Amino acid sequence: MSTPRVLSDAPWLRSGPTARVLELLNGHGEEARVVGGAVRNALLKRPVADIDIATTALPSEVIRRAKAAGIKSVPTGIDHGTVTLVVDSHPFEVTTLREDTETFGRKAVVAFGRDWVRDAERRDFTINGLSVDAAGVVHDHVGGWDDIAARRVRFIGDPHARIAEDYLRILRFFRIHAAYGAGEPDRAGILACIGGRAGLATLSAERVRMEMLKLMVAEGAAVAVQAMADGGLLLQIFGGVAYTGPFIAMIAAERLLGLPPDPVRRLGALAVAVTEDAKRVALRMRLTNAETKALDSMGHRWWRLAGMDEAIARRRLYRLGEDRYRDRLMLAWARAGRGVDPAPWRELATLPTRWSASKFPLKAADFIARGIAQGPLLGQVLALAEDGWLAANFPLDEAAVQAIADQAVARFTRDLRL
Image 1 (spheres, rainbow, N blue to C red):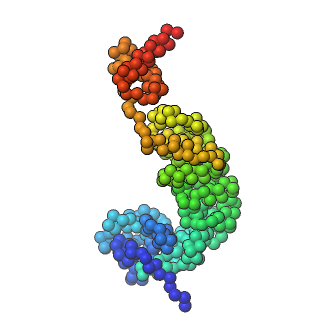
Image 2: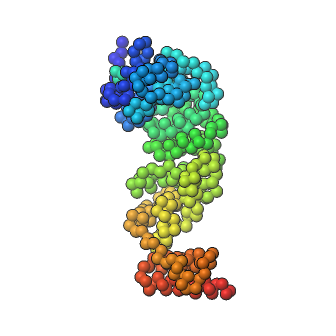
Image 3: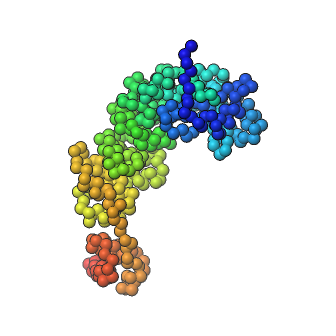
């Protein structure tokens, strides 16, 4: 008999809220274990966040035990056997062991059971199919232990069957590989994803958005995205061309600048060359308003930022604001091509850390005093004056500012007469 594999370095398992939930659900003929991502992350020495628990107890029994212990229970997915228990403000999804009897995309008819092997076999990837009991013993029915050691992401069983059960697993395959895998994605998994790519059209835009934005910032995003592009999957998602070269260059630029990975900025590098691309991608992925505006700004004449001197860069920064300026500039940098000297781009990208514009010193009252009536024309004069102030390199000297105001009024009245 082989020696049991034990998860030794997991204090969250042996004390605190997790231990309390396991103690509640174990005993009197029932067993509970931590399953899925928490086990995977613990074995990989990654942070453990959400902790899911599987149990042989039926949902009604889970609720009964929670009530008896004074623990709040919420029937968040009762039809599929899931009850959320809240212990010390920590939510735990507790799901009764089950097996799918029929599947309809993301919908499934399930039967509750007591078979840990069957429950593991219905999950997506081997590294997500392990469970650990209250004593720390790791139970592996699908070969997940060896795959975690090899940092290999494989579907459980037949990849084609797993994907047909839920086409979101195509995106999850690449996202999980980007986050936890090493080297090229599993060949059998790639071929199954390519074979099932038409099923991506059946997914909700919200689910696609969630998976893609997570993929964008994963450690191994470059390899995973290239594999998706090679397999024709990105065309299905974006409805247009994907630019893997700029995407890889964007990752390199972020790292050179010491910036945290930004999902929308990376998405812009991958899918946006012009504003029309931004609108299409935002619609297909149902991006939020803030994400849509950021993507649209990146695509708006980014090429004008290439080769700027600092005086022009300051005016762009003033107009766009720090975030929009940096994102658009970095898109121009990413699309500049291989072999480009990074030094000038880095200088431009770090301008917001070295310089910030003063507030425009002229106000409406300055022009009313010069005879400009309130209304739309006043706004036009203010805009002319602001343009002149920018062109003069943001002066704050009172004489220079008043001269700019006089010039704006003179130009405006002259233009009105023409």
